[in-house]
Length: 173
Image (cartoon, rainbow, N blue to C red; front, top):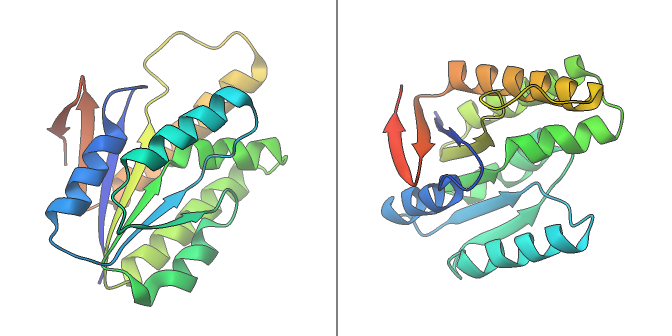
């Protein structure tokens, strides 16, 4: 049965670094990194490049912006630890494809069910977007709401939840 760890926090709070540390400290050799971000502009391309540089060479990277549960099913027997970074970008990708909130939550539920059946540690990373100001646009408010619901679903189903504050993990579950 899979163990689910959920790491969330604000932008630049150390979420990705902590997820990599957990994977490295696990002592397992077969580690997968599922990247959900898409390089839609120059700035995002740079961010993705920087993320790739800090990943250990032995980690196998998969890029999957839309079908997380399908990829987890496909790779499940081959890895001891899987990092999914990040659910916020994943939800954003689906929203940009006009996917309904219900279908996004269903995809997250499916990914969690798959993760639970795996014989691996799965580390989900997400942004906490509900601590800031109310977004000015309707799309921003809908995104904040969907991301918040995604985070609630994952936190409820996770074995452990960490909230990152200034690079420090705060265990909340």
